[in-house]
Length: 462
Image (cartoon, rainbow, N blue to C red; front, side, top):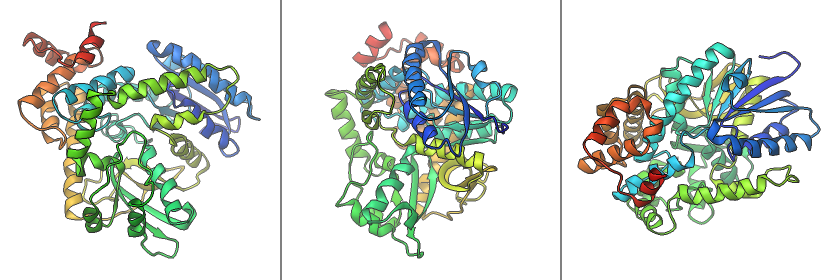
């Protein structure tokens, strides 16, 4: 860690619309996290957004009492050199890639979603090779740095970093547990300090239990409230209620994304209705993001705008900045993270990455033991973890057969000729960002496969 002169933070994907929230989190914690300089780095295609959001980041620090330098660069090595912390929040292929991930499966009547189903696997295919390149750069340029990842699919990305990048100083983060821990205490007229949370599972596929500070389990009290009040579902998930009987049986609170598995029929129906009318979530987000960047251009704006909460990733700063502050100051804060299991969830191998409650300090994340899950949840968990492992291996090797295996094991992709067709069309649609699959893509193109969705076809023709 850096000396008393302050720390250097490099943010990869610095042109993201979430960057102002990250800056807000750092400003709020400056007294315990004395930052010297922040480097926002992006790629050439993101240069305009980097300049817009970078100028706003500088205004935010100028409006604060603190003397922090904000640097903008397209040179990743310059940003990484001697960094103490590296945060990652990038999207390979930008939002247009997400549109393709969502629309191609939807054309064939299957879930198209950013981190779930076929779309989630393709986001992993594009992202994992890039994150492993970043890890190799870090080994040369900042070998003592911590990597704080909230690039989706965060669990698979963190798994790839640990398993294939051989980099243990990494913590994966998500805003979904943060949202739950902000909303649920209010349901009981309590504060977070009055409750004890224990999470276990995978990123976007976890469950949690809650006790009060006397040790009484209040999980079912929160579940009761979920059916009469706002349960804090993230903005990007359709608010389809879980079947109450299932929650009574499991006596745990599922993550918001479990709706895609426990209520797949209804979630798919809603997604297909949007696909046919107002457009998929990615198309809606593109509009929200365009509005945000128009706001960010305002030379008078020096604080995070309220509209950012509509983007679906609110509260990332509370997770990311608190994690960094906890490592730096050895605070031992309870944070829900993606980290190496080490026995916290005995239903999975100890060396795989899980999303669990942990105490975070100078040694990183120390996971809190959750214990064995009930049979139904245990079965789901083991299927999903092995789907992740196959997806990661396919992303690294570019092996078409492994990609098809990942599609087959994923519960949201119905196996058969249609699944293979979706795989082929997504390979073609993302050709530019899948160099590891170049051989497989050449064979698909030689077979005469073409994308059928009209919106994606138009995108590809430009």
